[in-house]
Image (tube, rainbow, N blue to C red; front, side, top):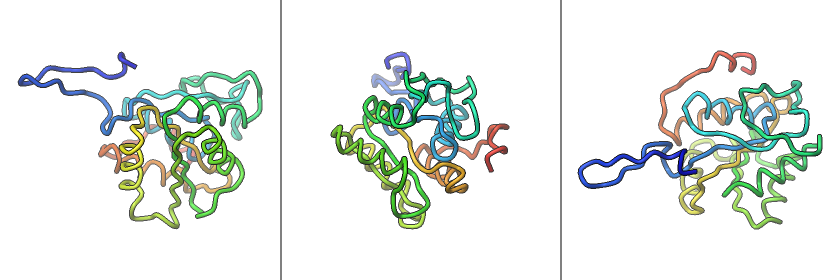
Length: 186
């Protein structure tokens, strides 16, 4: 991780130059929706990214593009990559529109509990106004350096992508930026 954070000397103090609030890397499994939004945000803003994806770079829209620096698990099944991303991160945030977890998002929360890893579920319906504040506090409280991002697929909750990007823009206090490839998901 040392190469991911650059330090500069200013007026006798060492100041970290890199992503704010201590997050040094964003990881996800690369699925459409929440996962892909997090990876695209990281790429657009120069934040290191990574994670595990199923063998064959499997996602609901086909094979994941090589621009995403994800490693393949031995199995072509989603649960293995979900578990490995939870295991290898300092904390997981799950983004959904609905207030209740289901499917892979529910599995993610269960795996985090089983592995003793901190996990935060953010629902746009339930947490609309406080998401940036809640995520910032979660990251600080648990000293999250590697943040795993999970959540709904685009086919289940198409607007989850915008929810993730808006939340990260608040969290990282960035300008609104778009990558040309984002339009295919909006």
